[in-house]
Length: 293
Ligand SMILES: [Zn+2]
Image 1 (tube, rainbow, N blue to C red):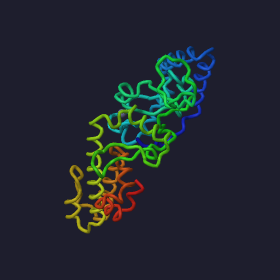
Image 2 (cartoon, protein in one colour):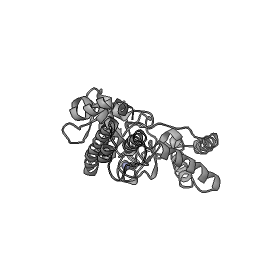
Image 3 (cartoon, rainbow, N blue to C red):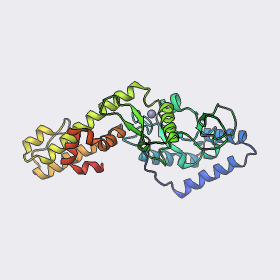
């Protein structure tokens, strides 16, 4: 999970969302607001105008996705669902707020996160509380889950690459509140509990390192023959082109492979933890431009 680069909505779409929010706010109490938010959501594409609004929202969210349309929580599956970071049942006022949306896969949305929501409540002995469904308006909106629209999850987690467990751990430097936020988010989204994700992160690390190594070798190549030996299939070298042109094309293709691959958290962590990874660190030294990718 990495922070998303937010994009702006058109004025027309912002106005549409504002009108829907006003209809929800106009309801007399929390229960009615929550049920209005749900019915507005169910009919959000119910007319040509509404469909255009949500088509723009979906398109913008796709362009903000990490990797190629990959879920912003697990980074493993296709991002299909418009997900409310604050669930609409607990936060109807945010049901039509742009800042509350991201794209997730249906597994993360429907099997893990659902509409679970925890807050920090200073009135409770344990100030950490997942609110039971249907319990009405939360005492506050001090959400526990890390919000990747406005926060950098990598300030809360680190990925264990060195011991090859590929488990995400809370940062040791966090205070107790930060640690609870990290632990809750990992548990809520099942980011460590799903073995598939840990295995996929491990494979992603090998892939990224392979592409980086090839990039370094292409960068340092001096003959067309060595380019042919390094370029991975199905990326074929066109020997009829001038060498510098072909070298740049292969470099760009390898950079693109890295930029578009799923599990960008793994790439970010390879960069951040490179001092502990001598081989990878060596590649970054030979191609420091890759630290900007
Ligand atoms: Zn997912």
